[in-house]
View 1 (tube, rainbow, N blue to C red):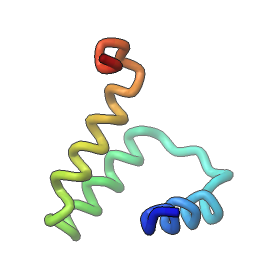
View 2 (view 1 turned 90 degrees about the vertical axis):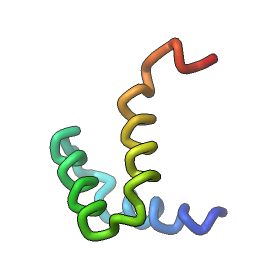
View 3 (view 1 turned 90 degrees about the horizontal axis):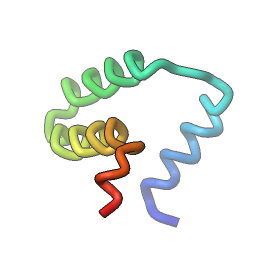
View 4 (view 1 turned 180 degrees about the vertical axis):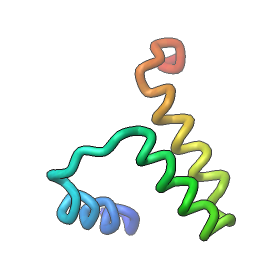
Amino acid sequence: MYFTDRGIEELVQRRGDEQVSMEWLGERLRDFVDLNPEFETPIERFATWLARLDDEDDDE
């Protein structure tokens, strides 16, 4: 198990039954980057990955 899996597991345990909008998620990511600017690049990459998840062209 990766160290980051602990946070993912906690997220699933605590909020696994909730449904959220992409708008809500975007706002939380912005809040996180505002508080932790050193994570701007990884959050940007994660958000881009999520945005393009269904793009068939990115599978290559």
